Image (cartoon, rainbow, N blue to C red; front, side, top):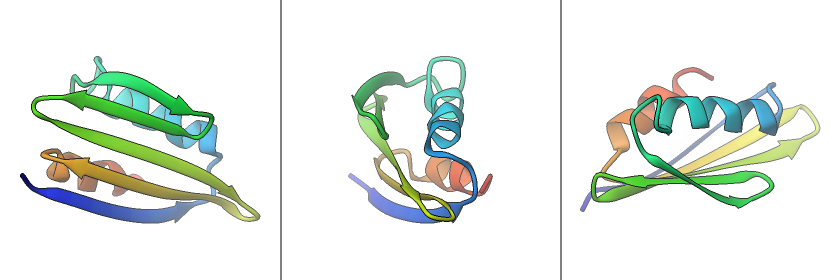
Length: 82
């Protein structure tokens, strides 16, 4: 199983990042199930893998940390938006 961990920074808020993640990975996007994991964390599951998106607020925006198993191509596409 192929696993990946990537991150980036954005000027967007954590809420904006998680809204984009939900639209991208969720049922109307890639088609994964959404599992809320906390105020700034969403997890998506399906297709034999998962994607976990954490959006931590900083002084200048948000640090995005994404972990995945089996969805690496889509994670790279998602992070390219930022």
